[in-house]
Image (cartoon, rainbow, N blue to C red; front, side, top):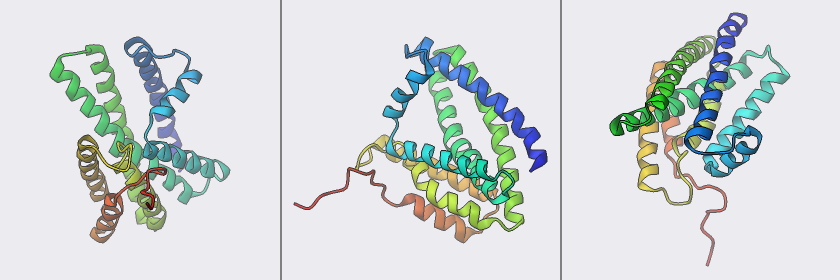
Length: 216
């Protein structure tokens, strides 16, 4: 873990630049509030329930790790969430889709360049995370990694769902994210039974709180 801190220090620098880029796009392209403290509640209100829950889980995992930084199992849980789910499944899928869309429309070349650079960074982060998780699996930390996958995979796959019924866009996104999730688990050399189990859990119907059917 000590050697990993050297690499993770470079990732912190990358994420800082990503924040600067996204803040500039929010202000200069989308006309949003330049004050990040005021902007964050606006963004939170626009997020789906699944997206919010992923953010809550991330905060919990980081908090647990901060309480005991030397706990290798807790560290692997955080890496599973951030490097595999957040970056490896969600971020790269979304960023590449945005780049493709802008290229088709020949629009916003500066934004395209910024996201291409960000995607390059994310790919490097994911490669590191996958290496770290493969090491963890070899050292017997299968349960810690699987626990996060079981909890977060359904949230990630259904991240576009806003109500009890998925739109065509949300269903298409869920299929694409399921493929990304499967590809990442194959890269970890997880047993086929584990991959099948996680995909089954991720594919179950997702019902955000407050949208459950009520008795007549």
